[in-house]
Image 1 (tube, rainbow, N blue to C red):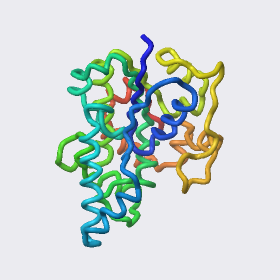
Image 2: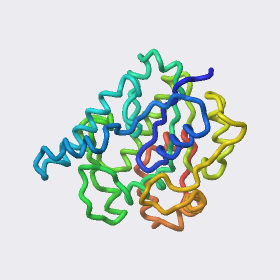
Image 3: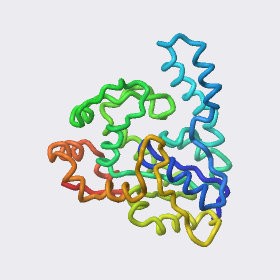
Image 4: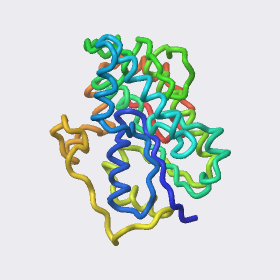
Length: 260
């Protein structure tokens, strides 16, 4: 079925913004946004009405409220656990292509450690092994409840389990591994083209990082995210700990394997 809408779900630091821009560049589709869409100037002036020590709290609160606002139109925050009940009930679900973007759990945890993007965490950097055993605070827009998770490893488990539910709840779903975009760009774009029309015969890539602070190119990411580098870049004890805590069935279903 050819879809008119496209919704990308991808956790933080998995390339969701990059993939969304790729889709906008190469396909004729109405992308359902999951970004915080309030004008930055408006947001800055609103936050200035609060005391400085209260601004972080209200910034996060307003982002949660924005997620609730777009929950029934755009299926909420792009980094959220997908809202399965909404997806099942929404009339436009049948005309929506759901693109689920994932990263190997070790790649994901490494990226999250470098850039947590969590308003409840301090800015102090902690060692990777400590990060793996630290609690992960949740926001409402995570769509995982209010209780802190035992660790960021559990964040991967819970979000990926929700992705698997989407595969059963929606008619049009494509699961793409971030690593596959780097190793088989054309092939992954072809998979999306099975559901939404291409604009031109070929595909245009985005060669530079979509994050302003990163001075990296597509080729740099290709070199970084090689599976064989996992055992080179990480301590064996950290890898063993991650694999003990990761939901192995979910990992296997998503097509990932342990690399030690």
